[in-house]
Amino acid sequence: MKIGRLNRRIDVLEYITKRDEYGGEEGKWEITDTLWASIEPVSGTEFFQAQTVNAETVVKITVRYNPKITVLNRIQYQGTVYEIIGVIDSHTAHRATVLNCKERVNDGLCSKAEEG
Image (cartoon, rainbow, N blue to C red; front, side):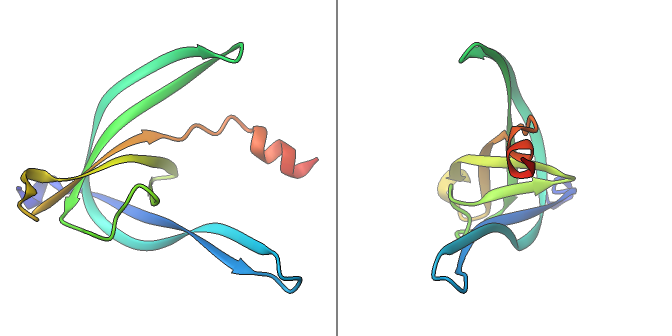
C-alpha cells in the first residue's frame, strides 16, 4: 500500500449508549478515531421502493490495517456519513483494511419528525 494515496481525513463513528436520570438509554454516534484514508467511488444506483425513488452510492474506503473497525461503526467524511457494509483485511496481510460502504442519504424525514 502506498501511503501517499491515503489523502483523506475520515472520522470513525461508534454508537454509544448511556443511561439517563430515569434509567432509560440514550444513544448517539460519537467520533472514536480519526484516520487517513483513500476513498474511491464504486457504483451508484437508483431504485424504486415503497412508491418512492431512492438513490444509493457505494464507495471503497482504504485505511491502514485497523482491527477495531467493524460493520457496527460508521465513517464520516466532510459531512457525509457512510454505513459500513463489509470489512476486509486486504490480502490477509494486516497492512490495509478495506471498507465497503454505502452513503447514508438523509432526506429530512428524521429531522422533521424530531421537530414536530
